[in-house]
Amino acid sequence: MIMTRRIIAHLSRAGAVAGVLAPLLLACFPPVRVTPPPAAAPAADLAIAGAAVLIGVGDIARCGWNGDEATARLVDSVLLADSVAGVEDAVFTVGDHAYPDGTDAEFERCFGESWGDSTKRIMKRIRPAIGNHENNTAFGAPYYRYFGERAGPAGRGYYSYRLGEWHIFVLNSEMMTNSRYGAAERQAQLDWLRENLEENQTRCAIAYMHRPLFSSGGHRGEPLVRALWEVLFEGGVDVVLTGHEHHYERFAPMTPGGVRDTVRGMTQFIVGTGGADLRGLRNPEPNSVTRIQGHYGVLKLTLGREEYRHAFLDTQGRIWDPGGGRCSEIPER
Image (cartoon, rainbow, N blue to C red):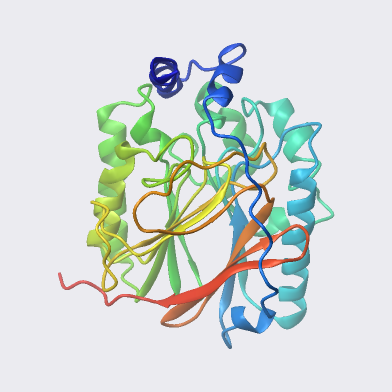
């Protein structure tokens, strides 16, 4: 089994996993042990006066499944409430929008009938990040066609935007992990990120991408994204949002080397619970604070001037893992 996982991981980075290999990959993941529901948490725990809201998830739509319809309804209900209250908001997605290969047809039939439904507010607020499944088809060409300018420059997949007092960086983790991308493309993203951080110095910043550096899931994290983490850490980013693993997990603030750091460390969330098959967990990785498996849901972040609140909202209306943090000081240059 170990050898099988190594072979499949190698082929996955080359974009070759498909068809008969996919069941082999899934068989290597631990079984799902559904996390017992928490005691109810009041919605007031999530509120910060005058704050913006960032809500989203990754690993979303597969035709014939209904998890994505449930998360789409949940996100749309939050956006409706925000609209009524005059709250500034945005929807993040952390890759793998349409399974299994991110084709034009899968985007239209699978994603398009839930998150892409024109009667919902999602597509007006969405700011996506690309995942590995989109790269299975023409380097994500259908992905860029579907989302247009909201996905950033076609073929690049990284960009930034402002939301309230926060600056948000959207990254292409596949550029760092997929051998079809070259060294020049990887370096270009790192250079862009470093320059963008320098040009957009704010007290509070978030980055999101598909693959996590740390994970207690079946993939066990992706060391090849550490170069992105190092630039983010140097730039004073506070929070990193990821998917790829099909569970929810929050880590304590850490350095790129995995050392707990409550002063400058970055808090990583995994939220791959958007509607695709849910997966189980292995033994917890160091600094893993909260793990939830077996529940579809989304992450809601309330972004204040110097602080944030977070909570995982499941599709049954429950609130998990409410908490928050303060932004780090901008590093001296």
